[in-house]
Amino acid sequence: MKTILSNQYSIIKNLNPEESITGISLALRFCAEVYCGIKNDDLNDNVLKESVLFVYRNYKNISINEIKLAFEMGANNEIDVNMVAYYGKFNVSMLGDILSEYSKRRNKAIVEIEHLHQKNIRGETFVNEVDHKNFIARQEVIAEFKTELEKKKNGLPLKYNSHEEIRIHWPKILIDNGIIQLDDETKKRIWSEAQHLVKREHQKKAADFTNLYEAKHNRALLKSFEDAGNQTYQAKCDAMYSKLFVWEFLKP
Image 1 (cartoon, rainbow, N blue to C red):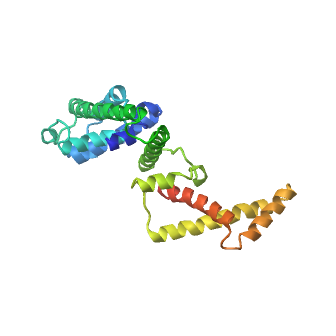
Image 2: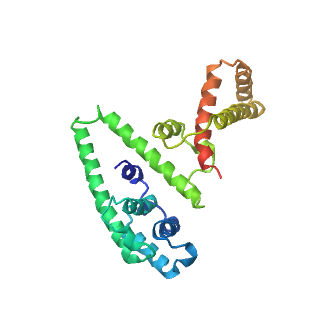
Image 3: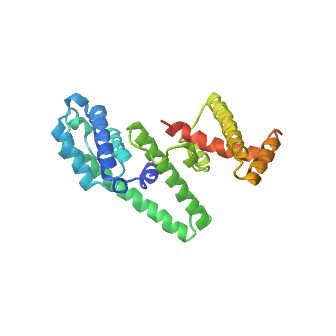
């Protein structure tokens, strides 16, 4: 249920057509090789083309990640399909069988999610509606990050083009949910980079004499930053570090 919930905000119909077709094609190539034993060079181009269109037309309410998940669940006997019988084969019919059974499981999970939502409205689960909205917001962050990560993996353009566009609350959500983690050396490097970028930003403003008041203010800030315990400097570095932490996974 948790996997389905984290993907329900990045479904195929919410992507542009070109991005959807490319993503579906890459996912099907992966599944054909990993779960059906068919290498890319041996995969029939016409079958792949029709399979991509089949998914695009009939399964727009699932995400591209869920195509792989459906095959994985089939291999784990978590849905009612015989993956052994499909080994060495890849066609629209078997794809329909797998995605149909997955969709049944998915729809059941969504009904359970909605049931929990209704229980929350009645005050039977979450402490209050604010807690519930925060939960949904966290799941949306996770889904968006996973979508961006999948785009990067498949060579597709990302929504975010620099660390400056990353929201500062993302790292805590992604770390707390076990989505991302970095080793200590990388954390130290990112922290040093954050300090450098904060100082460089204010140095640039301090040297801009088109606004004398702003330049003077930033020179004063830079002077105060020399105090290692300066709270303003610490807060700015923390915010920059948060953005860079997530950008470490999305940067080109």
